[in-house]
Length: 445
Ligand SMILES: Nc1ncnc2c1ncn2[C@@H]1O[C@H](COP(=O)(O)OP(=O)(O)OP(=O)(O)O)[C@@H](O)[C@H]1O
Ligand SMILES: [Mg+2]
Image (cartoon, rainbow, N blue to C red; front, side, top):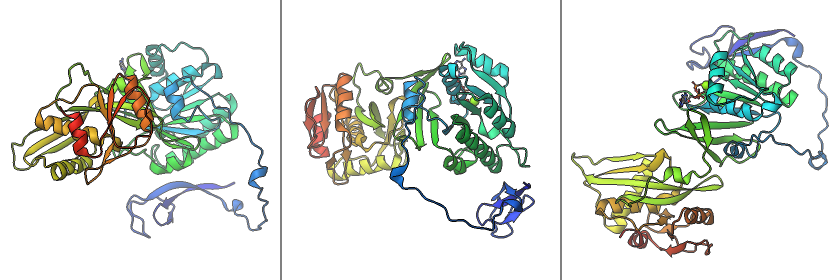
């Protein structure tokens, strides 16, 4: 079969034998991506009618997932790794992708995992393994970048699981463009997806994230693979969050929490303690809420600082919280409660570097703001859970029982919540508030 490489415009489909910066057809810049074109012999001229099957007649196969025993990882994967699946793990430089993958190999040591690296030497891998205390026999390591050879090796060695670190360093011999280009990344991923589907061997592709926070060789890769997970970490903090972005075999709501140390990544089974700062003495401007991440609740501390503005334009600065949401909550506090933040700088920070996305934190954010404004502390051992509407009304949020259970588990004695909380007896006193003003009276002493 004859093949040749052509450059195809991703905007209009224009084909060219040479790379061009600008598409002559539609004028798009940098849109030409190298692809492999098959010769004429694959173009069929005769047609045949195909036979669809009834959905109910398909024999049910039970998928046996491979569980690594790393709970935080297995949960994000939807309960374990599905045979023949291809997973992309993305993340910023140095976040710990290679570390996690090597630790995963250690867990599957009896299945002869194959770790293929295109960016580090065998000595570097060995040094990392030593540092992580990985001594298990059975892990195979290879430094290679040519994807055709890698595919052949996987087929002949039949390892239990394969790691490709990273997809951006791999290249296909048939393409002329540099490794890491969209054409190469797409071609290499396609080859590896094919191997995974044919052999039933699960393959992990480590993917670097570009400045925009997208996987290089961007969305293209996400469509081709079964699972996309993202490994995130906040520069100065040791904790790392593993998040599913796409999962053909499970929910994308789950997160896994890890802590990075010199001995590698350790699971954090009770992340709430991580995000609650040392609360021995409650300080003005701090409030605690319970948010939902996947199937779990986490307790998070919100810190606010309100101070006289030195300049004409008051500042609103947030870390880990949506800036627009803060402006909305301040507007509600001003309009509905007659509070005055006009000449104040407002800072909101989520302790531990956590990023809050749950509207259930609204009451607690308002409480932290008012507490900071009046320099009064919030009642001890109280959590605030609920969404705040524009009229200052409080709204119910999802999974209230999970949130309350977590708060009770960590020793909180009461919770300020919107009306009609369905659950009663979780060992925590419920203080119902109908609007923001009532909630704040209960919270801020
Ligand atoms: N001796 C050490 N003590 C503590 N932490 C370490 C040590 N060595 C490495 N680390 C941690 O491991 C991280 C590097 O991990 P790893 O190489 O797995 O990241 P990565 O995501 O694969 O990076 P890259 O993008 O370069 O491939 C460092 O950023 C650091 O946090
Ligand atoms: Mg790495």
